[in-house]
Amino acid sequence: MAGHSAWSNIKHRNAAQDKVKGRVWSKCSRAIMVAARNGGGDPKFNTTLRYAIDEARAANMPKENVEKAIKKGTGELEGSSYESVRYEGYAPGGVAIIVDCLTDKQSRTAPEMRTLFDKHEGKIAKPGAVAFSFDMKGVIVIESSKVSEDKLMTIALDAGADDVVDIGGAWQVTCQPSVMIALKDALAAAEIEPDSAEVTMVPQNTVQCDASLAGKVLKFIEALDEHDDVQKVYHNAEIPEDVMAQIN
Image 1 (tube, one colour):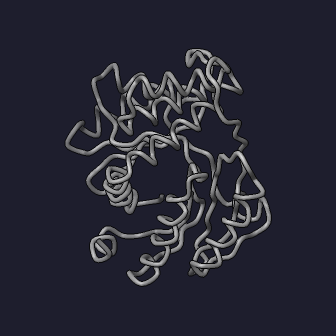
Image 2 (spheres, rainbow, N blue to C red; image 1 turned 45 degrees about the vertical axis):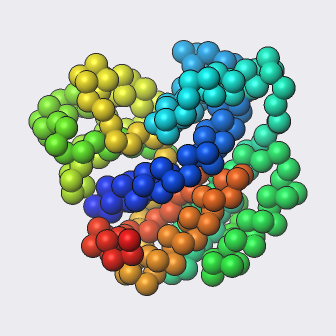
Image 3 (cartoon, rainbow, N blue to C red; image 1 turned 90 degrees about the horizontal axis):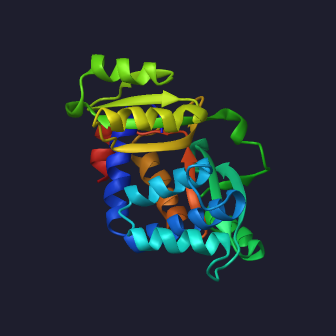
């Protein structure tokens, strides 16, 4: 998400997730399992696992579910084995799309992704064709009423953040992924609760969407999100808040 559309997109996404908690928790479990399998079950020494646990907590996933997923990942409990796979392509209007999946059967996931792209007037591209135009960044969004700009700027920059910008109703703090944990810890110490905090793919350029195009793109993204194997969907659609209001 980019520019002033980020805050409206986050509110839209959070509202949608509230309706499908079961599916969101399932995706969180997979991410925790893979992180624990690859780097061990202690989040103090496994940054990827900490990110996965933080996302699960943000989705209000019960603590026992988190612990069970960690044990499945470390082999203490029996669980499926998942592998990471990325699909890149375009949505209607030339909007760039990156889809990160965790699947236990790639031969099933690949044709299903192609079908989703085709069904929603999209087109799958070769690996790397889209990702080069995105940068991996830590992005934290905080509603403006929670903290003043000066206070947030001081805390964020002291913790190593790159920038703090007003995105209309909220502050957006960006940082390098390596700084994300220190930045979140600094905000927690100041008792500032983010509305969104994630390491994500930030587009270098965006595609401005009117209501017609935005409707098609969001319908496609929602269809991808509903697929069990899909963990993250990144895009470079710029959807202004007034356009989002029309769609909603």
